[in-house]
Image 1 (cartoon, rainbow, N blue to C red):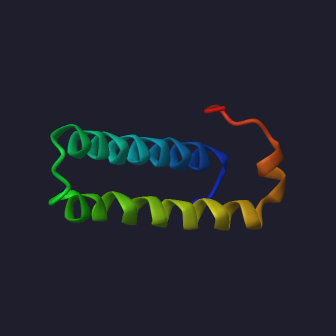
Image 2: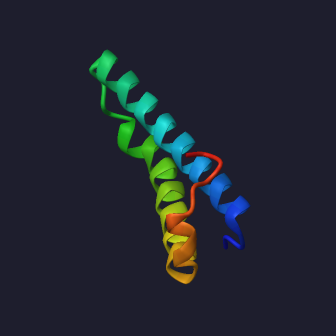
Length: 74
């Protein structure tokens, strides 16, 4: 559970990292034209993304003023 703006920044950074890892996995499967393992390998990344999205949305719902404030990441 995200407790403050610093943890929000960390969660946003983690979200970007997992999205990048998922994209790299996709590009690898695409370059090899082999999608056989993609569903299995992407499952963990997608779950982490889902959890982080839920936590980020929960924090922003409870702290709407944070959504308008600039963060260190952006």
